[in-house]
Image (cartoon, rainbow, N blue to C red; front, side):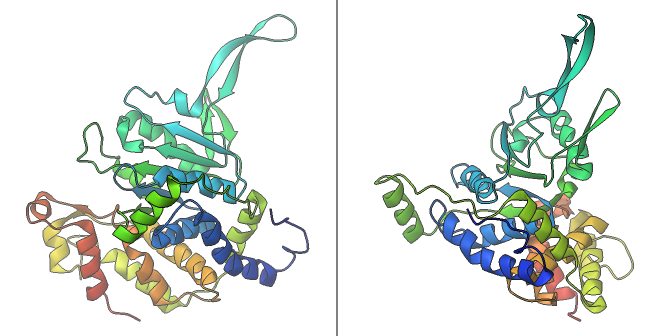
Amino acid sequence: MIPASNESLATEESIVRRIAEGRTQIKRELAKVIRGQDDVIEQLLIALLAGGHALITGAPGLAKTLLIQSTARLFHLSFNRIQFTPDLMPADITGTEILGENAEGGRRLEFVKGPLFANLILADEINRTPPKTQSALLEAMQEHQVTAAGVRYPLAEPFFVLATKNPVELEGTSPLPEAQLDRFMFDIRIDYLSEDDEVAVVSSTTSRRPEPIEALFTGEDLLAFQEVVRRVPIAEETARYAVRLVGASRPHRPGTPDFVNEWVNWGAGLRAAQCLVIGGKARALLGGRSHVTPDDIRALAHAVLRHRVLTNFRAEAEGVTPDGIVDRLLQHVPLP
C-alpha cells in the first residue's frame, strides 16, 4: 500500500499530482480482474472523487459486483454487501432496536447497526426489492446518517452507495422510485465485452487465479481528494452551459426544444447540473488539468442525465431512449 503521510497531503499541488498519477495506478490494479471496461472505470473514479453515489446498470454476469469489490480494496474502505431480494425489509439495511440488559440488570433498548454502516455499500441488484425497502437508503445517501426511534446515527466518512441494477424488463425486478434515482450521481452503463476481450477473460480466469488487488489509497486520502476537487475553478460560461443543458431537458418551458416536449414526461432537476459541474471538476483533475472545460460536461452528460430524463409512452412506442434524447440535447444546446 502507498502510505498516506502528512507530507504527501500537505499541499494542494501534491494532492493534484497524486490524483493524476493515481488514475494510471488504479487502472493497472483493476486490470488484474477487470478487462475492457475503461469508460466504466473512469466514470466510477469520477463519482468517488466527487463524493457521489453511482448506479451500475447491465445484464447479469458483466463483473459489476467484482468491480465494486475491487474498488473498495483499492481505497482500503470498509465494505458491506447487501443482496437485495423481494423479502428484504428496511430494518435489514439500516439496523433495528433490540431489548437488552444494562449493567444493573434492567432492560433497555439498544440499536444494532445494520450493514449500511460502512464506507462503501454494494447494493447488489437494488431493483429486485420493493420501493419501500429501496427508500430506506434515501436518508443515508443524502444526509449520510440513519435515524432510528428519533436518534440520528452518523455514517462513517467517506460514504458511498454503489448499486448494481439489472435491466427492468428482466423477470423479478421493480423500477426504482424517481426520488431515489435522483440521489445517484451517475447511471453507469456496462455492456458486453468485445470478442477479443471475452476470449482474454475466459482464458485468464480458467487458467489461473487472479492476482490480489493492492490497496493504493485510504479513506482519508479520498476525503482529501474530494476537498481539492471542489476547489477546481470553473468558468461561469461553462457552468452556465451545464445549467442550460439540464434546463433543456424539462418539457413545456420557454425555449425547450420540440423533441423534449414530444417525448419527455419529466426532465432533470438542479441536482443534475450540480453533478455535471462537480463531475467535470473531478474529470479535469484525473486528466491532469486545473480547470473544467465544456468537453468535461459533455463527456458526463449521458451518465448524469439518462436516469433523470423520464420518457413518456409516445417515446417508448417510437423506440426513443433517454440516451437518444441526451444525444439530441448535446446537439441542440450551443457550446459556450
